[in-house]
Structures are given as C-alpha cells and as structure tokens.
Length: 318
Image 1 (cartoon, rainbow, N blue to C red):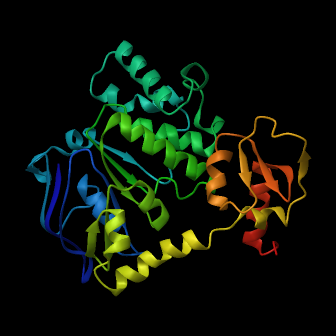
Image 2 (cartoon, rainbow, N blue to C red):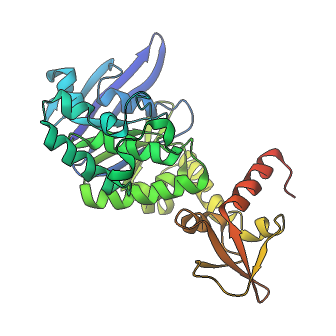
C-alpha cells in the first residue's frame, strides 16, 4: 500500500529523516513513535506531500507519489491533526462534506454519507449535523475531524497526534472508539504519537524512530519481548513503568470527599486499588463509578477525577 525506499529529508545541513525504508500493508494500523525531533511527523507528512522528500522514493499503490496530481492523491489520503481545525463558520455537516463536494458528489449522496459517518462515531445526526464547531466538546470535535477525513472513503488515513491535547478520559474513550471504528472500516492508518502507552494499545505494528533513523519495526509484543538494542529497551521500559506505577484509585480517594452509596445505583463497580487509567474507560461512558473500599461503597464522579488531576499538576495533591 505505502512503501518508503531509502527516503531522506534534509533542511540545509540538518538531516530530519535519514535513509528510511519500510512498507505499510493495506488495512494495517501503523504507528510512528520516538523522542521529540526524531522525524516521525516529517515522515508522516511526506506521505501526502505536505513535506517534499529530499532523496529516495515513496510509493502509494505501487506508483511513486510524484506520479499523482497532488489534489487527487490527497483526496485518497485522509488527514487528522492534533488541532482539528474545523471551519468555524460551517456546520458539522458542511465540514464533513468538503471533499465529497470537491469530488462532485450529489447532495443526496453527501447527506447519506454524513449521517452514516456521524452514526459511526456515536454522534446522533439529527442532534449534531447542524451544530457549529464551537458548540461541540473537544472530544466531539475530534470525532468530527476523524469522520471528515473518512468522508470520501479514502483508503489511507494519516493521524498526527490527534488525541494528545485531550483530557485522559476523553483520550481513552477516543482510542477505544478508534479501535472499534477500524474494525468496521479496515483502512490503512498511519498514526503519529509520542505516547508509548497509546502506541502499544493501537498499533498492529510500531515503527520506533530515533534521530531520523528506524530503530525497530515490530508488533507491540515483539517490542516488549525482543528489543533490538539498549535505546529500544530504555524507550520501551517507560511502558513497563507506566503499567507498574499507574495512579490507583486510592490516590484519588485519599484526596477527595466522596458520597457514600447504599447500593451501586446501576453504576459500574470498581475496586479501590484499580489503576486509574482503567477507570477512565468507565468514566468515558458514565458520569460516575461506584468504588468499593473497606466494605463500603462510594461514588466517584468525573469531576472528582478532573479536580484530582488538576491538583496533581499543580502539586497540591499529596
């Protein structure tokens, strides 16, 4: 589907990407990760020619990308940014419809596609199609950004740290939604992130870059069990530390005044020592969870967690 052959990108004397070669398979979720300045975003942007390469070749559907008219190629490659940049004066429907309109789709086909895509990401069309971007939450805007990239049914989606600006609960929810969405759409997704947890969760294969070089390309399991050098071991060890040192609910409970519950009140039930990141998945779907500790049940709300995280960032939580 996409192949890099000895690709380099230079800015003057600075080499941003150095002799990179790899192949991304059709339908694969391929993650680019590495330290800041390693060349991952540059690598992504060379695929749809937002950044021109200096040396080598990139192939798309077995032809060099230089063979395609730029506008036609970009119609076949959806693009999702961290700052989603929806047109503020346009409705959700109008934002999603941009590429289909440029491709000459008729109104009925566009209307049907917009509704279909909104349903895919659990946004009710009747509720959201006519809203403006400033009437949406951050997570909702990101969902619209994702389906806008899918609007003309491109075979490839590029995603440049799309969830990094979101709060932890929204980020976890959108990661889960993207996993489920990919099961339906089976697109080739190239995803840039600096977050090793996100890479391990989402990627079929991960490409770890360092100073413009490819250090290793493998499945998450192979990265954990068969790192090829000390740099990779050190980089992947952050994932192990994150797993081992995740905040527990106890950290929140000790710094939060909680309401006691006589019953779980149909809320999801979690134990007091559950890793907080696991609780995000429940809080992404419910406004609160029931926490069991010392034989008692307490209610923990999204607001409680947000307040704790904000205090932690300021250093107020002890």
